[in-house]
Image 1 (tube, one colour):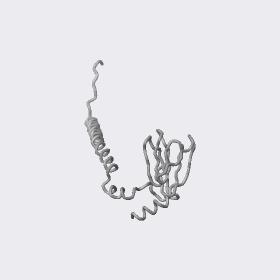
Image 2 (tube, one colour; image 1 turned 45 degrees about the horizontal axis):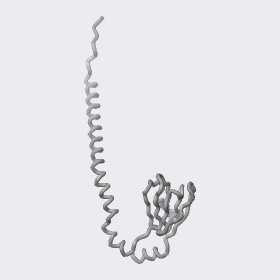
Image 3 (tube, helix red, strand yellow; image 1 turned 120 degrees about the horizontal axis):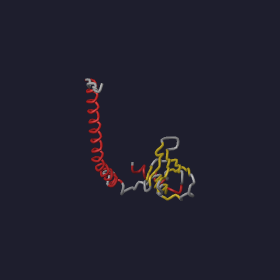
Image 4 (tube, helix red, strand yellow; image 1 turned 180 degrees about the horizontal axis):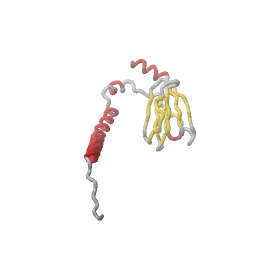
Length: 157
């Protein structure tokens, strides 16, 4: 009556425990490799992405002769700037929130722009500053590439 006997572990239970241990080890190894590759790839990616934007190899020779002015340039001045830009009747170029200091430039001949809060961004139309709208006001407008920029572009091509 006082003796208790535990059931012996069967081969199936031992195989299941071994499989779980192997899977746990595999998850740890994959996670560690992913974490290490993220740390290893962040530095080269940030430095390599900073290098081409700072000194692109093909553009410096073309830029001093004819500086390329974007049709629309949007600069975020608030913590969050909802911006929507598209080619009329065509592709959506951006439909997201920009962060403070983030910029977006577009060179298409004609663009439609929608700003949820016109006071949060600074807009440059063909290189000239557009006056900001009142705080909290939604603003929608179209911008066409200026004639002198279109002729400069066709002369450089």
